[in-house]
Image: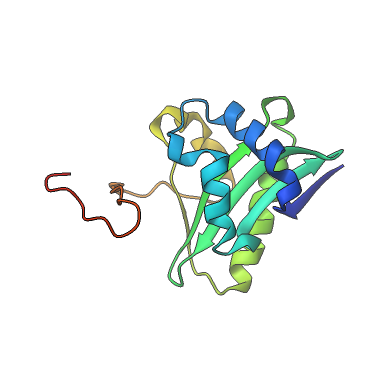
Length: 148
């Protein structure tokens, strides 16, 4: 039986293994050792794991900024896919976001993972005409170098 739970420190090793499997080409800033402590500082109740027989088989991180909810780090171990685990995590995080009066949830899919879009559409998510942009900030209060 799969249980959807709020992340706890005892799940670190399992999430680390899961992310290494699910996101093998990810940027170093997204490793479990960096991302998890950062997430634990802000809305830790929106960091979910799927557990089966004491093994982490799925994860989902979310946040709410008071205007929109965001979902990221959705992963299910390859051997456990197509069993409704991601759907269960989405249902739980959507319930938690709704309790916060979150009116809309955004999620982004990297182009290399576009095959997952039909799954998200079955969950009710729509592809919107948007251009996604980002900017890396320097650590601490160091100034941003010109032209970067």
